[in-house]
Image (tube, rainbow, N blue to C red; front, side):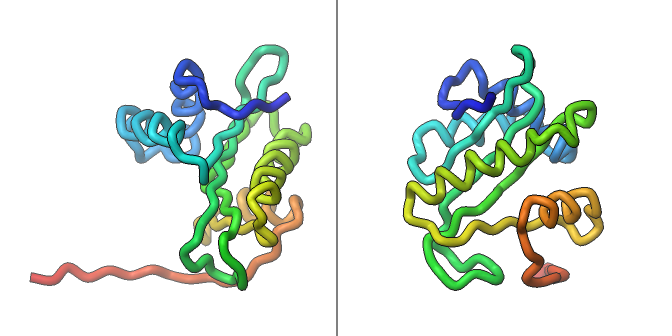
Length: 146
């Protein structure tokens, strides 16, 4: 079972799961970000429950800016997905992706996109298994200017 989280009491749960996905983040910053999503019609966070345990989440947005490899706008974009390791390979990620796709379809999107780090082989394999096709690989650069 998955559920759209628009209840502040569940934001802490999603934040704890998100910290496993993005461990370099700070709890306070992430929880503030998830709390701010409550007021946005263009984003959803779905939480997957298994026997009353919260074991995974997915965050989807509707992007109107250019999304690499897509041709339309808006585009549904998977901002993040995480399932506890002991619950993987049980169809949970697929159920979360289905919920995200439904949200994007309801908002007239015809494309659903995502990205991940070049070195995140598990994520690449999951995306491929769930029907995503790779569109590009990039390396980003920055330079400080004074």
